Length: 285
Ligand code: AMP
Ligand code: ZN
Ligand code: FE
Ligand code: FE
Image (cartoon, rainbow, N blue to C red; front, side, top):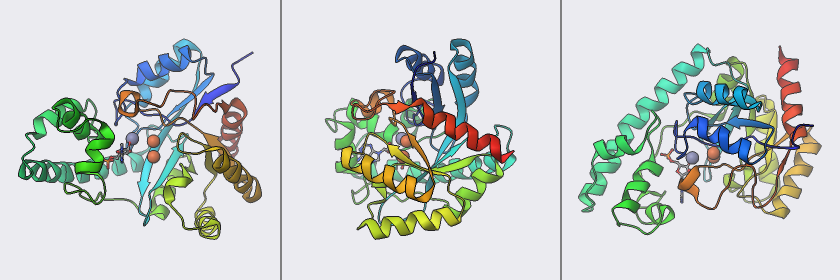
């Protein structure tokens, strides 16, 4: 009997997590999970190593990626599940997003220097072991050097939207992001809908309907940012629109200390949701 629990949203050192892809998979084994999807921001670079480790440990595994889409005033993250690792469109997208980060990070560092924070691009690159270098890596350095008392403090004081060293990031339109995932052989799920910060249920439904027209396959129901009331609400919405339900911890290692792999606010993610996702991907072929 395989374990009834899975985690379909987590990060490794390929983006802004603190565990290597292999170690995320090993932790999944320790937590007794029967399936895992690695969803690093902007990249699938961690997937081959994670996949190999998962095969060794007998954990089911699918490639994943988390893409930031253009949406205001909140945050829209889209999870691409089951994408083809050899996809050229995905490689091109990855290249474009990394180039945009390479433009943005030095601006953040220059602004921090202006604010009398001693930090260099070399330190930031050293902090990040992968190609996706971003604010969480900068935050970790600010914490280590004592400029702030926590990662959250670094975002509040310097790096967050509205803070003095904030610079916007280039994002894909939702339409383009969904197209890219489809062209790469995957399906798209709306991550943590709470972060959209829609004003009311009607607005949330409109966003979901618009995404459905663009080919959305599911919504992330269980997530570390979702309380019981939200889980109930998103479950009902998914069922009403005929969308897949997914869930994940959004584990980042010590970059998000209170999140453990395999559970989201104490809730576990049912294996059935992974199986339904696999079914959906198989039907596409
Ligand atoms: P970036 O891609 O460089 O813009 O960094 C975005 C990442 O920073 C997100 O995926 C979060 O993991 C993290 N992040 C954003 N805001 C905060 C915050 N207020 N506190 C802690 N982490 C945050
Ligand atoms: Zn992240
Ligand atoms: Fe996210
Ligand atoms: Fe995430």
